[in-house]
Image (cartoon, rainbow, N blue to C red; front, side, top):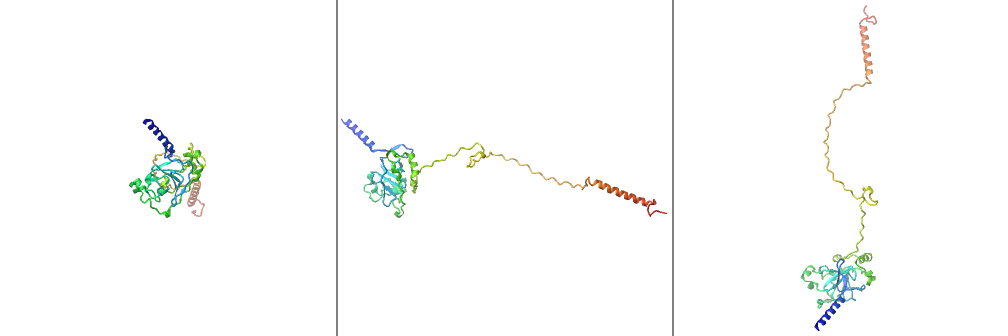
Length: 288
C-alpha cells in the first residue's frame, strides 16, 4: 500500500516541477536552461524613484531594466538579456552593476527568504550574503552621490509588438535591436554584457592575376612582392689616363702649296741677287 502512494507522490512532484519551470535559453551558444521565468508579453515598467532603474510592479519576479538591458534575480542568481524574455545570460555577483544592486528591498516582487528583517527602503545586504571577499572588492557600493545619478536609459518599446509566436530568435533579435534601438550603454560593467547588432562584413574581391594595370577600377592595386636581390659588386673606378704629350702644331695639307710657292719665290730672289753681284753687265755695279 505504501509503494503505490509513494509512486503517486513522486509523479505529482515531477509534474508540478515541470509545470513551474519554463525553458528559457541562457546565452547565445549554450543549451536552453530553465530559470523559472517566462514573460509572455512586454511588461509594464516603472522607474524606481531616484534611481536610473525600472522595475516591473505587475510581475511576481524580481525583474529590472537598467542601461539598455533587463536584469532578473532568480534562485539566488542574476541574469541579463537585451530582450524582455531572454535568452538570459548568467551574471556573477562581481559583475552586477552597482545601480541594480542599490535598488531597495521593497522593489523586489519575489524577495528571497534571507531578505526578511532587512530595511525595505535600503538595498539588500549583499556584503552579508556574498561574504567578506565580495564586500572587500566592492567597498562603498551602497554610498553614492544622489545628486549625480545618471539619467535612465530609454525603454526599448519597439519590443511590444513581438509577443507569443512572433517573439524573434536570437539572430533576428540582434538585427531588430540594431534597427530600432541605437542606445549604447554608459556603464562599463553593462558594456561587458551588451551585444550590439553585428554589422555585415564586406568581403573583399579576390586579387587579380595580372599586374597593377589589371586591377579593378576604383581600388588601388595590391602591392606586389619584390624578390630579394643580391647586391651586385660595383666595378672599381677607372684611373684617369695621363694627358697626352702636346704635338707641335703642324700645318695642315691645305697650307703646303702656299708654303712651297713662298719658298720658290724666295729662292728666285736669291738667285737674281747673285747674278747682279757677278757683273754680268745687267746692273750698275758692273765693273769697267
